[in-house]
Image (cartoon, rainbow, N blue to C red; front, top):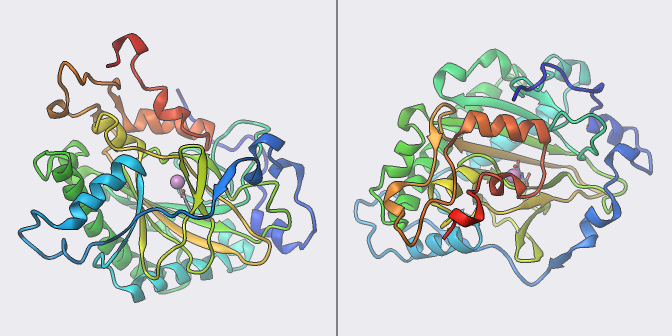
Length: 361
Ligand code: OGA
Ligand code: NI
């Protein structure tokens, strides 16, 4: 499987469409009637779990901490939770979001210098997937690598605004620490040695990349999505939402729940690779983003991923004759290529890795 070097069609910046101020959106963004935001049930009386990490951080002895059990339940049942008292300063979170807002409000010719291609996706982009004629999502984004070190290329990061790099280095360093802590907690909750999941990711050679999503105002929000339903292909996602602008919806059974961001909380979710490593004990859950007519929205999604060359398969300690492996090994590089050729498409992606039904428990 190979990814093309260029996009199949000329790229249109969604922000330019929004800035033109038209009252309708182009057909390219209109979803078929059965796939629109209001064609499925939205549960208004629910939210994803909110978990306070204060008792887990900076402690040697975490046995018996109630939040351990809360995280375990959230990973198994929701695949999503919000965390507060996570160790990253609120002020740094706000600065990180605002430097990106500033970037997206730079003149188009400045941003175009960073235009990306489907080869690596790094830079300023406006579509996921390379299928010609695909219906597109109402968002632009910026994608960059932070780890492993050899993939980080500051030339591919915005040079403006001037303090951008400094703020982002600090932010990414802090969120990386949070990811490491969460990985330990997830491993302990599976009954594994605390470094087991991190080691399966390749330890120091694990990957960390950022996608900043920019969702411009949309004159017809009922016809499209900011981001179509998908599960995250990587390991663990730590999302910084835009306070006061709901948009993320998480699937629970046959309903969608709109996440109400708590002040200075991160939204954490399990990605496909941890679903595979945990042999489906932890769930990588479908989610989507709705847009709205009055306000733009900026979110920072940090993806903590296995090193691209390692085969990812269910961890042996979790298997038994009653619980055989439900997935075949596959490297993250191979998996990502497959995802990137298709764009966001529900949960079919990790399911297609499953062993044939006769081999399942
Ligand atoms: C993503 C994602 C949600 C959001 O970037 O994969 O699901 O609220 N983002 O922007
Ligand atoms: Ni996502």
